[in-house]
Amino acid sequence: MATIKRSNSTVTVTGTERSAQYRSQQVLFDDGTIIAHESRGGELTSVWAGDLGEEYIEIVHLGDGADGGELIMTIPGQDTVLLGSLYVSQLPGEVPETWPPAIDLAIGLMTADTVVLTDEGRVDREEIEAFHQRLLGVLHG
Image 1 (cartoon, one colour):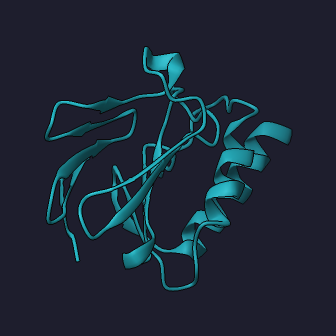
Image 2 (cartoon, rainbow, N blue to C red):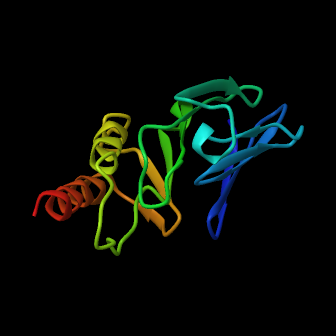
């Protein structure tokens, strides 16, 4: 079982063979490998999957949020989803059209018990669902 530690907007996931530092727009592995979306100069277009030893992880780009190029990391064996800055408590005045669908897809990765970590801390699935509705409200008035 990997350990997961959050410090500000960085989440470090340490497995038996390697570790990864997750930030909303890039994941840095201890061997120097960097995963970033192509819009941020990386090579990822949609999904990367691998392991940290005994722990399987996925890194996905489901759509742009406020800044663009946001990544989600899932740790299925621990029912954990890292949303980074794809979730914000204070909505901006404008919402990119891809943001609500990205959150909708992220909700599909969660159960009622999923641990959801964002740049602002831990939130539950219910809050992510409410956030999705707020995004739709800003986008569609």
